[in-house]
Amino acid sequence: MSAQNQQKRISTTDILQRKGKEPIVSLTAYTAPMARLLDPHADILLVGDSVGMVLHGLETTLPVTLDMMILHGQAVMRGSARALVAIDMPFGSYEESPQQAYCNAVEIMQKTGCTAVKLEGGRHMAPTIAFLTSRGVPVMGHIGLTPQAVQVDGGFKVKGKDSDRWAELEADGLAVQEAGAFCVVLEGIVEPLAKQVSSKLSIPTIGIGASSACDGQILVSEDMLGFADRVPKFVKRYAEVGQMIDQAVGAYAKEVRERSFPGPDHVYTAPK
Ligand code: KIV
Picture 1 (tube, rainbow, N blue to C red):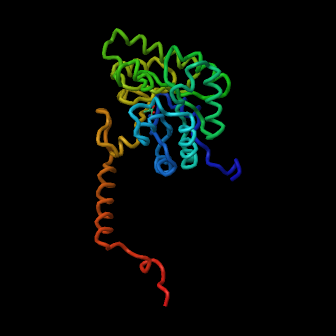
Picture 2: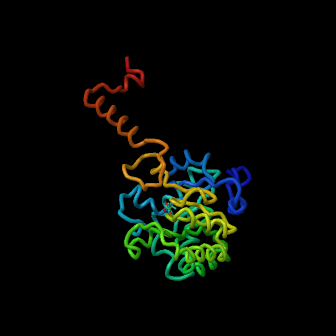
Picture 3: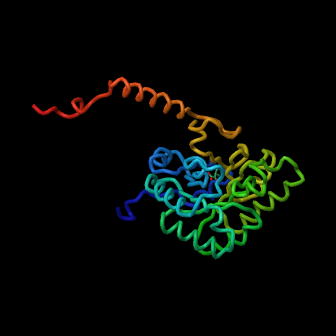
């Protein structure tokens, strides 16, 4: 397909222009078929490093590699045409230096064709974000509860319960914005803080467990679709796909055991 015939994807400028306007719909996607289903509805599809926990059964996102992100990113790009696709930079692929981050972000963009990368961290990552954005790599920030810091934080802990720490999170948001991020994920922060940060920033905030005070929301698709038994408290389940799979597979298993499933004679013409 020539470049002219391709459907135009939502751009970083489109997302920036949504500040304070129509809320941004964002979901995670890791595979082509899921991306195909989500693409007509979502503004941003994030190939999150949550893929490690959701699809690969890992306890944390820390073991996720650059190659995994690229493989899933390629699948999501093949399955989508409209949404902006952002891909998480996995733990260890960007923290060492802005140069390391740049090399790995370029590899992600060149091998997948995605629009942007996401990386975790506030003020301390701002020089890296500035290095990337000034060299053509669009960055989605991620502050608040940052799952890659789970071991230093001692768990996945909601931030901002103590208002003495609010100024720090606001400073993180401003630093990420100043560094050139086109939007920022606010994860696991109390509603009044999400409201305060969203009102102080001129870039859109996209909340996850951060209330509707943000400029949009992102959820892990498998959580909101009901694949998993246990999901974070703030997640509304819009479907019970896990139960549907259980029922369907149960019916299939029963038919196989009873030998009542259709054979080739139902599909092909039997030889005379
Ligand atoms: O990895 C991920 O899926 C994320 C979102 C939940 C924001 O970072």
